[in-house]
Each structure stands twice: as C-alpha cells, then as structure tokens.
Image (cartoon, rainbow, N blue to C red; front, side, top):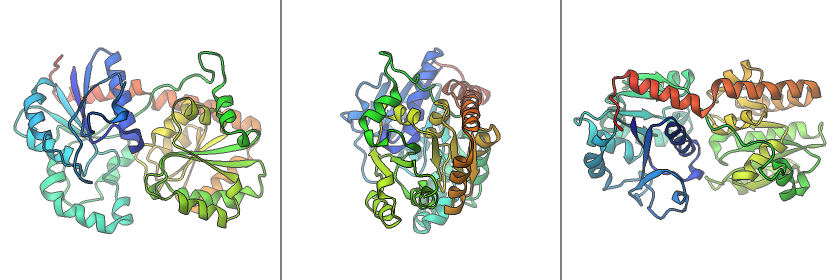
Length: 392
C-alpha cells in the first residue's frame, strides 16, 4: 500500500507527532509498504537531511497558521497516486488544505488529532479557544466530518475530544500508538550508554536520578514537578531531578528562578534537548521517569522510558496512564503538586526489590501496548477496514 503522511514539520523539537511519523513510516516500509512524507518545512531544513525517507518539503510556510500556497495544488496533482493520505494534527493549514484538495477527489484521507481536541486547551487558553471557534465551523469541523476516519490513540482521547466543540461529527477509530524498541543498554562498541551520559554530566554520578524528558512547556507541568520535588528532596538527599528538553515556550529562566526560590537549584540539572546516545543514556542512568502533564495525548517519551525498563510516574491527564499503572509499570495521580509529590514519595519508599519488579513490568507493558510494529499493523487494519484499495 502507498501512503502519504502529511504534517506541518518534521522538526523533532515539535514533539511526538514528528517522531511518530518517522517511526511509523519506517515500520510500514519494513512490512513492504511505501510511505512518503509531505511537510511544510523549507527544503533545506537541517532535520530533513539524511532521514532515509521520501520527503516532499513545500515550505517555508507562513506564520503561525503555517499557510502554504503550494499545498493544495500539490495535493491535487499527486494525491491520486496514494491509497490514503494521513493528516497529522489540527489547527494549521495542512488539514484544511487537504479537505479543499481531496473532498471530491475520491482519495480517502484520515486525521490523527494527536490530542489537539482535548478540552484542557479550552480551559488553559480561553482566548485561543475563542479564536479557534471563529474558523471551526468552516474549517476543522469539515476536515473531521469528511475524513474517512479520525484516529485516536486512546479511548480517553476519543472521549475528551467530544467535549471541546458542540459542533462535532467524526467517524472515530481508536488505534495503537507506539515507538521503536530502544537500543540496548550497551552500544555496538560495548560501551554503556548510561556511563556515557554520566561522563557527560559527571555531577550526576551516584545520584538517584528522577528524569523529565520533554518540551519545557506549561502544558507539561514542569513548574508543579519542581515544587513537588522540592517537597520530597529533603527526605531523599541522593535524589536529583534532570529536566531535559528544549525550551519551546521561553520558560526555562522562570523555572530556574522557581527552583532557586525553593532552595533546590543545585539539585536540578538542565541538559537541554538530548538526542541519540545521550537521550538513551539518560533513560538508562535514571531511576524513574516523571511526566506530570496537564494534557498529554500519548507521550512518546513515556513509551521510550518503558522500553528501557524505566518505570513512569504520570499524571492522570496522560491518556495512557491507566495502561501503565494497571500493568504495574508506574503510578498515576492528579496533575497537581500534591499528586506529583505523592508519587515521588511512594516511589522513594519502595524497596530495591520492588523497584526491580516494576522495571521488569515496564518492559512487559511496552512490549504489550507500545511498539511501533503494533502501531503500524493497527493503522493498516483501520485503513483497510474502511474500504481503501491498495496502491503500490
């Protein structure tokens, strides 16, 4: 089957959707299918180099809406060569352009909202929500209504999507979501990835590392994690918080000031965005992963952590928290300071044998729910079930 994946950007700093598209494309190709990617990045964007994928870059797009005048003509000229088009994300030009180009073409398109219909955004950003209402009836509503299927990665995401806008109609499907199996704990040359990370950050050696890995963004609950860690740090002198990720909202300075005000500035390390061996080394060197997000559709870093055998402490606003907690691979609590502090306190109170059991369960939960192979197979199942004919 020949599939076109469409998204605004493949920039890894944009979070999970870009990584999902990369990995699902590779998994589908391994199964004998052909996937091409259409993005609104500039053709010379550095993250497009050496992707190993067939990428069409039509940008640079304009403004926050990512308007791209070449997009509709391109789709009208080329979309018929694909069995299906998959739109990743909402609220930017690529979704409405797909509807404009394909609504009468006979080419089916599918939409992954990637959590962008969660009602949390309405509460957190009421003015932005009002702005979205201005073009919801004539744009995103139609995009969802006319899609062959709207694809949600958890039942919780599907339920919440219905609460954002009263004018809502979609052919809903829930599909698996996942990521590639992480690399082994030791590199090809035999070196330990954890040791390489600790060599790069020697002050962390011998510490009990609590890892946050994601964008430094208000949605992620970084501020409440700092306060929660401050509540528990005095009782666990060896505990150290690693806040790894890009400063996507210009928030890092304020978070550092918050840590200083709570007296824990020397117990937090800010390595920025970690890539490749440094990212995997951080997972391997850490004791537990924490994601106290106020809204999280999936959290690809959660799956990566589990794949490394790293238990996860998640807010109940992370849509996959139930699978993790019920599988014994972590804990869930409200997205509050008290909820996050309670999980940290419970984790530090566990005996080493209990930690070891939870690490083993993390591997098992990853293998059962969150592999990219399961995601690719489930996506194909849903696409084919809606009557899409194969094209190669």
